[in-house]
Image (tube, rainbow, N blue to C red; front, side, top):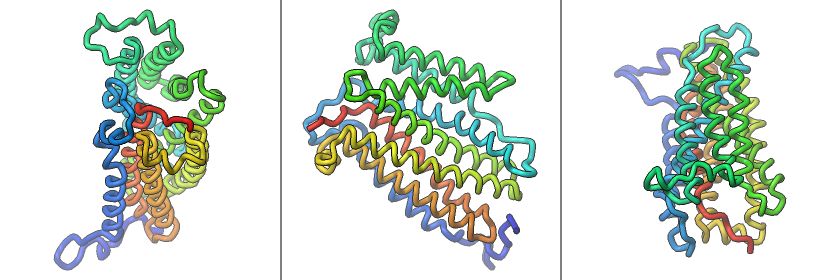
Length: 335
């Protein structure tokens, strides 16, 4: 098996030529951008014409949650791929530099900002005197916000220590806190909803962060046999993760939007519109993943699968942004 592209396929008589599949990658990314055009314009665009009112600071909260999700994806992906690498025969001992300390700092700042919003009664604080830190201990949301702040501090210390693998515990605590926060006790069967969110968020973090880490590792290793093996191993696990993400996402959506109201709420509510954009994006990501898997199996050079995989990472980044917005919008009404 050769892992380098023959020169005749890369350059023509007059210089570099258009790589096969590049046009399809650009077309898919354009579709992805169009899918999220309205939500990315911010809460006002998603809320336009719905009759719903946005909570104060919705745009800022959406941004902070997107940063929080990225801060989860990157280190969890590194830990996940680190275990996969140990299963690859002949894998080089060196690995790309960890981004975990930086993402832990970003997660700390994001959760600190979210905690300040909770400490002011879910309002945007305009001065430090408005923040009631002690009040965080008096509410469930406040305690969960403090747990997330502390967990990112511990995760950062673990990332800088000699045993970075132990950061899986504080990161898991953040995932659990987010799952509980998304489903208050006043909700019908909150533990079921929290369990679905936990599975959804955990699998999504492993999928997105894992793919980013795999691509960074392949770039660090260069065109090698172990690189193709690592990509193939990740692809097999990613198929299971996608199935779990899809199942938990559909179930969670149906709990919040009963089947008889789904079509109407997907177009008439801000939450529904943003959810629809997220579904379209995930469909694009799934198509890119299938394309990469096909190349991995059938191409003489398995590493050509990196082309759609890079586009998949970009699309997954857009999914994270939309997910952050989704958590900040008003929940749909149970009709």
